[in-house]
Image (cartoon, rainbow, N blue to C red; front, top):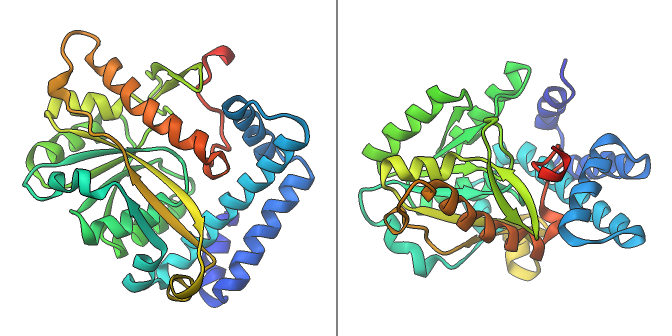
Length: 297
């Protein structure tokens, strides 16, 4: 049985505190032994921050602790009430973009692999408009199915990433529904990534958000997610020492971009916003996989 699926099923019978400690211990073992995921995260964080030596070692440790926190929260989310979710999520910049959620049109939210994007999706599905997300199809299928069921229980519809077929579904949704289409796009899975500049380096990111905006005439809303320490009444209501911050960036309107390079230019616009958010809180960027650094191509 897949290790994550085993943990998923076992966690149903364990207190949340035990799950958090176990996830943290596994992460620290990976940090101490320089596991493959630790080495990949360290390499990515070094390029974002310029850290090296003890500073990079400490940052990587904090990064793995953040990853462990995310997975522990995922295992806990089946038991989370709406009140608990609300206590854990704090929102920044909503007033400036609230008008986007009051009409009958879709909004394209673009995120990176930072913080707990599942938790903010659960919050958004109740407080904004229905959330539709695209997720990589994990193996075995049972793991993917568990993720889909979990997100559905919090009002989030998940489409499996299947190339052109999924994109056609997204076009239909964007053109016809009032939905928040959430695309985690800092890592390109399409094989046709768009070159952009992030942290002063050339990288490739997913073309999906800008391409969808171009064909549907729907606006892009960059979103950054990070963790923060909780204290007092909010900590008690959240049942956790950590909360999640959802920050909305500046809206990108496809009507402002014309010409053959409009997809590239819109992609650079949201990539700049995500890069700034990640640079401000690099330990919450969960990039344990190969990233699209063009210098490695």
